[in-house]
Image 1 (cartoon, rainbow, N blue to C red):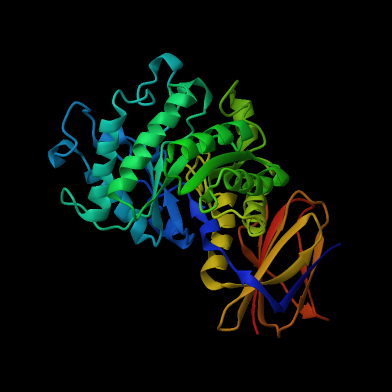
Image 2 (cartoon, rainbow, N blue to C red; image 1 turned 30 degrees about the horizontal axis):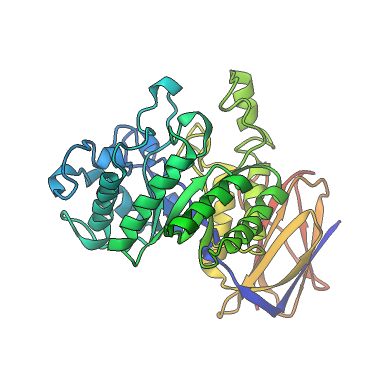
Length: 443
């Protein structure tokens, strides 16, 4: 039997809401059978990144620079040369959900054959491209071109320039460094109040990061945040990256630069999803306990959120690609286990603010918090563990109105019988596999 302890008399800081952000927003395209605005709002996502929104909104000209400013030979100072309307709707929809906007400048990923890559070809004129991006920021933050005053703080330059095959940047990294330097300086010149950074590297590879940090330091290119991605199912790998990136950034003098992991997702293997795909391999990667929709994925999501609290990471964005197989719905447009895991996290960050001391077995991840109204909660992730029972010892407070919700392969945050005896709440799993529990009570 696993044992956890939560001591509500010992405060350990604040719950960090920026560790719960999204790479998904409800689409404005009519391709969707359902409207997920309300379900998304319930997730309480702190911020929403706009990368790949063009793929998610089929037939709509949104976010990507080539959709907003399609003819690069035109004058970027003339508002008539921009098409903002579709992106206006999308961004305002995000903000109506209660989420901030994290805007990725550039293009969505190219899933075409290598010889057909178009939008990832480096711009012919970096300076002119920077002027176009300035026009986009001016429209959304300063009301230019019948625009808005959205106060978007984070503006990310490009995405995954180190992705092989030219699917994101059809040039070498030295050329990208130069592009980043020109764009970042231009944007900070006109908009010193915003956060400029990037470039969302595919991973936290040391050589790639060192070369980028070295360039930015030598050229004095603004770098308010450094961003990267991580896909996998190994907790040690993803939770070890923020500290490693922070150490490298500090080494190069970027001590004030924020660290942002803005694409992460549970993944056992790319095989069967993006290579050598067959109906059988695809089905195996989606369904079942270890599939992209399974309880292992959901428990991993909660584990990562909990684990990030003990790292120097400033923000994290779960990559949920709409209603596709990366998303919060399954391919049948039903809500997946991933959705319910994010729903539990959203409830936790929205209601409880002050973190308290916990201790746990190495295979059980736990975070506990309370608020000024005397409401308390414990969020538990038991990832790939066969033990059926978990003992949660609660101390330092009274326990009234106890409620336990369980997320497993069978149930979606369903209430289960719970009692508090001798200072202990027993959390019973329905099967010897992953599970998530949300325990709430009042003092």
